[in-house]
Amino acid sequence: MSIAFFATQGSFDFADIWLSIWANEEEDKYAALMTQNKSLTEAFVNTTEVTIPNVNTHFNLTILVIIAVAVILCGLTRALLFLNVTLNASQKLHNWMFDSILATGIDFFQKDSITGQIQNRFSRDVRQLDSTLPKTLYEFLQCALIVIGIALVAGFTVPWVLIILVILTVLFVRCRRYYVKTSCQIHRLIKTTLSPVKGHATSSQDGVYTIRACKAEGNMIDLYDRFQDEHTKATSLSLTSERWFAIRLDLLCAIFVVAVSLFCVAQSDGLNAGLVGLSVTYAMSLMALFQWCVRQSANVANQMVSVESVLEYIKLTPECTTGKPLPPEWPKNGVISFVWASLKYPGTEQLALKDLNFTITDKEKVGIVGRTGAGKSSLITMLFRLVESKGKILIDGEDINEIELHTLRQQIAIVPQDPVLFTRSLRGNIDPFNHYQDEDIWNALNEVQLKEEIERLGEGLNVKVAEGGSNFSVGQHQLICLARVLLLNRKIVIIDEATANVDNQTDAKIQGVIKQKFKNCTVLTIAHRLQTVMDSHRILVLDKGNATFGVPHLLLQDKDCSLLKMVEETGEMMASSLKKIAKEAYESQYERLPISDDFDNVNAENVLYKRTHQERNVTEDNEEEANEKTKLLQ
Image 1 (spheres, rainbow, N blue to C red):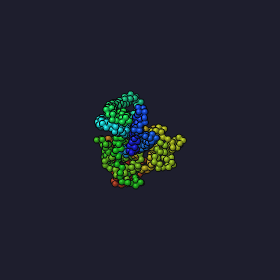
Image 2: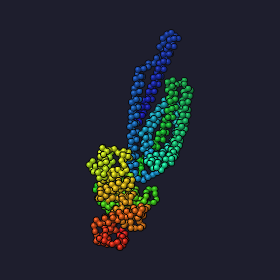
Image 3: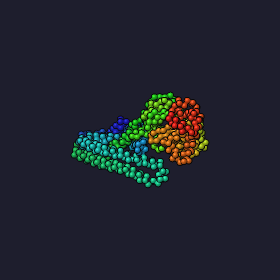
Image 4: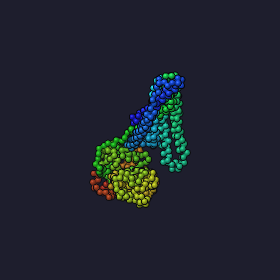
């Protein structure tokens, strides 16, 4: 590419030089003819003392055509090579940034205004890489070579000009350095002030219904105006600094043109007219080209701030994905053990979860309850290793901190609170990696009672999911995600408040599918409605990072337990209903389990699964005593 640039400019300059040589030959020929004519006129005789130069016009024109063709070919080659190089560079930078963001830790996305920053990187910065920066860089390189050619020609004609050129170059460099140091900081300020504008616009669009319901349109507009004002101030400062730079460049270029003209006038007697004209013409064009070249070089430096921002995201610290490999059938049972496990988010002092120490056995259905901010979602964060935790978490005896991250996350299925649907076919949403047959997908849809509704749409599994899944209801979003989990058939399933935003009918439908289809799985359910988990085998009650683990019915007997307080806050009728559900589930579940007559040897964990013969036959008079004994065994 460098050769193409130099070849193009060299051909272009050679064409001008060739025209100058041709003009000098024609001038010498014309001067000889004029001398001959004058001699003939004065002496009336033909003299042979005057030699008329022979100018081969056909040869000169042929050379000029060849040079012109070379300029065209070299210019096209230069443009195509430059386009290919810059386009590939932009694509690679975009892909590296995208991969880096996907591979970085979850704490990166919890920063303030991160949504606007990411949008800024993939919109404004990538646009700079795709279009603005290549165009500016191309113009700078082209102008720089033209300026060098002009300086060489002018210096060849009037060597004294080189002295002035050196002085002006030093002034240009110093002026540019001063400007670039300021303008780069201004461009960083522009990017910093633009991110809140985009982030605010996105969040306002997402929460437009809430904004209108609360009649907060005026506040949101005022906040947007404040963000936009800050961005406009930075942009105005950038335009002002550009004008300051341009005026000084024009002044320096004018000084150079005046200097060249004065030297040419001063040495007019000893200079060839063609070279003088070429030098003055080049100097006049230099007034525009030189300042444009320096301005474009400054713009390249300013626009490289976008490359700097992209590289900043490319260098994000990735999650540690290495670990020991495990067989494909892992985990076989789905036993989860927390051994003094704690979690603290980066940048915070307080522990989100403190010293968890309990075991969830295979096929057990565990409900997770707690108030807002109690740490329910943090438990999922620990299991998926979104943030590294302290202590140990074992799945079938394997420490998840030592397992390959991709394997760990692949073997745990989750139905999220906010289901995500991508703008693609329904099949691509349920089976994005094409691992399953259409029949398996239809079976999964049938199990979540969506098959008939999908068939009614007419396109089958190829039905297009609109942006954000707007052509499906919120309940259908949850059922589609549930079908995705059924298709995966994992031993461990996490349900993150899947029914928090759906109606009671859809809630009942989802709960029925969960009970029927996940009976052979270990299921952890984060509950928004207490009635959905009161019939679980056990409940994990979280309160300010502390955990209480046990059977719902037994936990409700503890007056100090947070679960009892939450149940009572639902109202007298609902609290009575919840206690009844817990008691019936307790008696029903443990009645079916094997009987152990050796009560003294029952393990503190297994006592929650096995109700002994003696415990089942206790009378109402000594029921309180039996509950106390069970608590001691816990």
